[in-house]
Length: 229
Ligand SMILES: [Zn+2]
Image 1 (tube, rainbow, N blue to C red):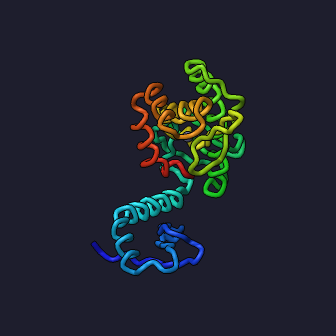
Image 2: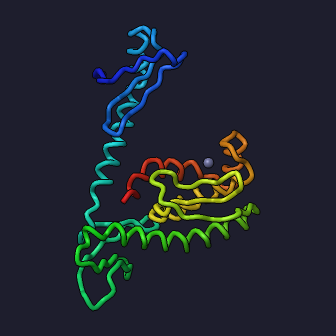
Image 3: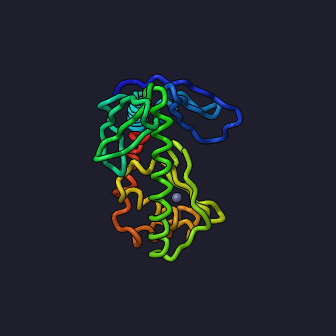
């Protein structure tokens, strides 16, 4: 085990627990009560060693992926779990924008690299609106749990939510995930109509509604970063 460099913040306000945070710059910040002995902090860091390494690696992967999109020909974009290649061209007499045809994305734009993101978000949002309204209706009838409304958001990492008034929201990015994973998020949010918190009861209900839900949940944790444009 190599020593982990970290920033230590001692606080007089903090009462008992030591906590750990990884910043956007991949710095490890440890917050501890003011008089915590150095040895205690050291052993705390050691215990969390694997978690720290994993979190930093995951964040680095995300940053690479997030910075990677160039909206150029040959690049791949996900739709319902499958990556499809993009072809960028420019033809003035055709409408500018993005079309999906015969397993390929076509972007008609004079400067695809600058406008690509805008056109992709627009396209994904339209697809998400269609797909989610149909699939939520289908699953909510099956589960007999009816939401008050559905909204499509641009959330980066929050895939779905259910408000106290049973209004559901889903990130358009989810349309890039495989249909079974989308179903998991929809069933999860619909289940919150019945059980608001992530209680033991909630997960039991989830298991009944979707026995393999854990698989989809961890898939999303591992792969969700691929769906950041
Ligand atoms: Zn939840």
